[in-house]
Image 1 (cartoon, rainbow, N blue to C red):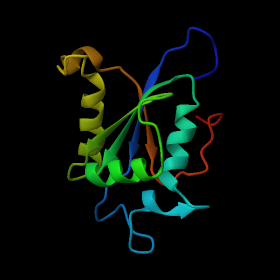
Image 2: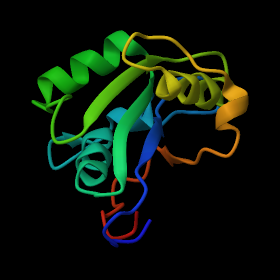
Image 3: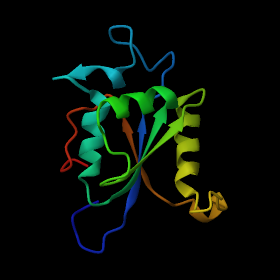
Length: 137
């Protein structure tokens, strides 16, 4: 995912689901811990939004809670990259798979045949990587 012109664009899936293995620090989801008044998840989204080779960002977690966190943090979900919030499923595998399927939908909301996208790459990022930089991505 270098900085060459004409490079491919990749979607990023940010996993921030709440479950038995995803927590807990101070009895809360790590994605919502704060550093200098900002949730960890905000730092990650801001870094991903600065990466030229990232197309869209898909965040999987409790949708209602995610919407509240982004609204209160004044994070623009439309610019510079479109951020999609996907309702979490029962485990990490299902969260990534269903977010991947969401990324395949076209403008009409139709899912294409996944067989035609078997080699499609996405970037999967954990919610507890607040120090990730655009250069590292």
